Length: 62
Image 1: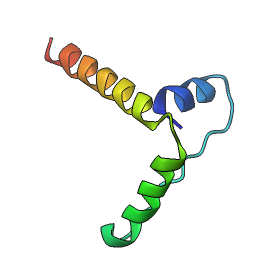
Image 2 (image 1 turned 60 degrees about the horizontal axis):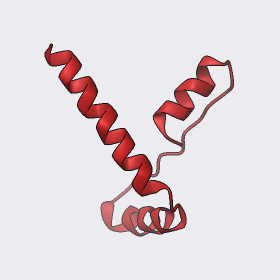
Image 3 (image 1 turned 90 degrees about the vertical axis):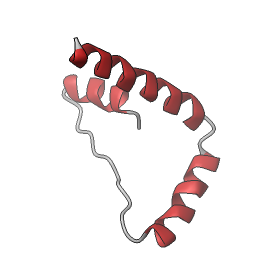
């Protein structure tokens, strides 16, 4: 779930939890690749998140 979605849900008093896989890269990477292939909207979310990060960096630099 993208941060902007979980943030907004949390603001509306919904309980939000995120699953974060961890472990050796060799073991975690196949899972992450499989999830990315299953979620066709990953590419759109990634570019949106990147633009939000870049905007925040510009804002902080002033």
